[in-house]
Image (cartoon, rainbow, N blue to C red):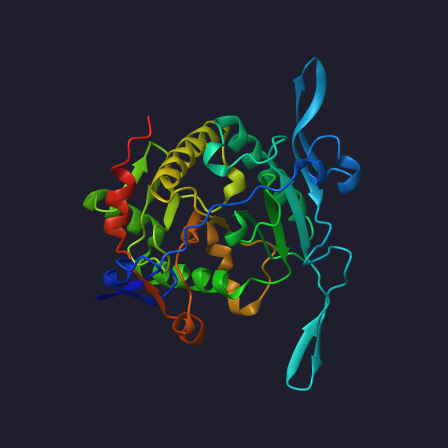
Length: 340
């Protein structure tokens, strides 16, 4: 058993490999695909979802059709139509549900699994994310805009049709705010980017590297909360996902496809979450005045989190996670898979 400290999120994680030996500890269950006849995201059902906020189009059977669409979420958590402002209610505070919540329909193909995405699927997804984040940032009320992807019902997906989500908040979520502050504090003391230092250390040690190319590295973080968690990080320091060049999109897609193929074999197609940890925008909060230096201290990355761990009272009650697999073991398993 071992305790490890995550310097980006400043938290301890308990590693208990003996728990991984229990046959009932991990959650590995097959997904049941829903019926495309009733799927609102399938071609021909556009009237169910309304107008497109963005479309990537192509030619199929001589006709121009959408290949990727972005639409308003029919059941949004947050809405741009709401007014801004926080109100007090005794010791409490509340506000309207200001923000934005959009759905990216990644593909026309119902039931396409993330493990089977091709280069073009990822390129269109990246383009959609960049277009929508760029547009939403024009609303100065929005402070943090990101992309999340729930793959499988255990990970929170409600439909089998491949889709992602764009979520925009009028505040900096606590998890992101903590990362933001921790990265700045490290930069203030060391005059260097913490993510860059971590990446350089990992590349030197080669103990947790899964796959890399000239532009991106996928590695198992030193102190992950979740078994088989992987971070995909740009090699060159950059603070904003929307600055991706076309050739970088190709290189990022290469790494994502590689890791996902390994996941599919090692974890038998288990559910997972994909989260973009990106820079904030329109920050005018006094406590985050240091955000003017964000290009120096912030480094974006993508989290891939398989949903195979059981979460119990320890995690919920204390925020301390128990991980049954050391990242070195996960790296050994993933990197040892032949995906050709």
